[in-house]
View (cartoon, helix red, strand yellow):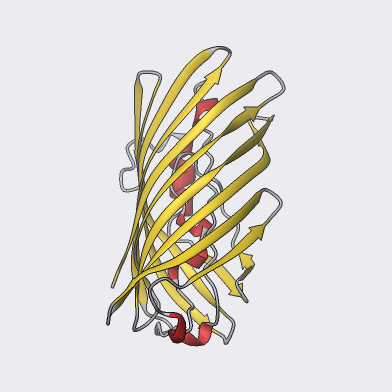
Amino acid sequence: MKKYLFILASIFVYCDSLDAQYLKVPIGKKFKVITESTSTIEVTIMDQHQEVTNESFAYHDLELKVITKTGYTLDLIPRRMKMKMSMMGMEQKMDTDSMSNMQSPELAAMYDLLNKPITIVMDSNKLVSKTQIKQVPALANNSEDANRFFLFLDPANMVQGYQWADSSITTDLRTVNHYTVMSVTATELELNVTTDSYIHSASKMQEMEVKQTMKGYTTARRWYQRNNGLLSKEIATTDMTGNTETAETNSPMSLKIKSKIVVEQ
């Protein structure tokens, strides 16, 4: 059961849009991305209710490699990951800067990701390709949403109240996104994003097939720099409910996440 509770739904996709000609970030310049996340999972397994709480931090370098008229290529390079998880009256801590508990499979998986670029190629608001990485249990992974880092918006539409919507469908995930420009100053643009998500996925854990179905919503506020279109900060909350199914169990599950992302200049 303990290993089972480490499964965490962590797929949240937002789709920012329009034309990359408005992106003014210098090619080759590196930025620091800090992701802070707190989550609570409640799950009932064999009539036993369990709660798992987790605090995680991820530190990445972000480098824009290529800009085209309709897209871009970027590298996200993980530099450090750490987390603290509490479950069933026990607490587990992991930090890739500490080698003392490298025998932990979860920490070994985290450490294996360090300093290896995750290359993401976008075109016409679509993901063309992304370096495949191992899933790390219970750790925020901001590479799942490459679109959040840049806002491609025609300057003529940078006015308070401007709205648009889009959607995304993959094998495991369906999302509908709604965007509203909340405020505009000489240096900054504030954006509200609401996302309705439906997840239906299948994976294997220790040779056991695990199916997960969840639906819910995310509300995020994002602040972008007007001079170059780069994200400065995002604060988001996510609520999802559903169930996790194996050959032996069908377990109701709920997930709540609060996250904060800061891009340092």
